[in-house]
Image 1 (cartoon, rainbow, N blue to C red):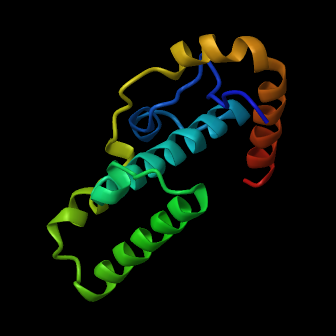
Image 2: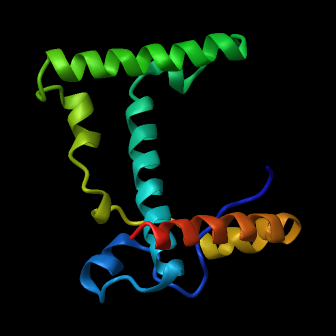
Length: 138
């Protein structure tokens, strides 16, 4: 599937807006809140991944070997967290970030304008299906 699965335009998106505003209403706001929360988790995960030098400048290994390197570094990360306690400064930087305090660096509305041109209908259908599913699960 090609395209960009962006948030609904004209609806709240940033996590602090949800925290200090009225409760979520409608499938669009529920989807945008979930989208923003997942984006925050992904950004924190990439922050942890960047701590590993081999992942910052991946040599020209095969895709399979690169995949295994990522898996191994995450296993090491989990091992360090479990056995070194929570005192490891390299990991504490990203572990203590509250996802609701993360400010987005860019607006998805601008990106969506560029990417939705060619795949808009397909991704709108996917987004609507996810939004309906989220709405029905509440």
